[in-house]
Image (cartoon, rainbow, N blue to C red; front, side, top):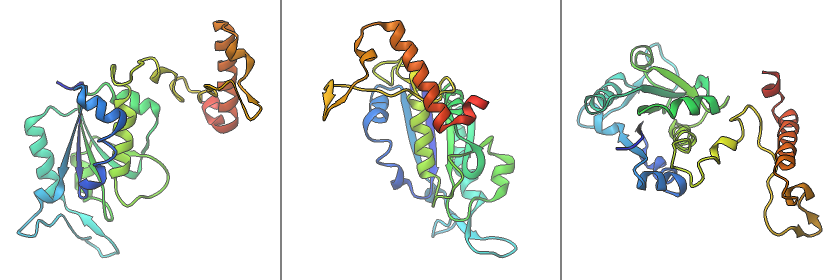
Length: 228
């Protein structure tokens, strides 16, 4: 049984095919550590045309995803799985960050609702959704790309997903710092040299250098992390 199971509800499920079918995420699924199920919302649509959206009450531009198809899809998932979180991906949600990924990685089963069109009927948000997440202060055409981001960022924290489990612990943001610079062979290229300290073999000095560079990088690019 997978360590964590993501259930993604989408009006355009084909958008999710590539992100979850390659590289680390695919290997995680092959190992049985992560499961990803995608649900086509049109399968739960209303009437012979499988309608999933309608005009919004009160007028205004843009269609709204209907409450009934979403409710029916979520209820079917819940009837088969014990769900920890029902997350709606929306620009006005809480900003996704590494701490949120760490928290989600402790869950067993998560539903991710991908918004589309003008959004979803707010009754779903009021009565079903347990948390709302944004991946940035901008608007995308749908929640599929944010869902893929959340799955990737969370799944890589599951023990056994990465070949070296300590790798995730040294990523940017894990300790409220950005990662330091990294180098590999060759030692010299176009007269550009690797910092001598990294070739010294002195573990303590290397670690001290990396910590200093991490602080320097954070101060330059994410000073709010140091302020926090």
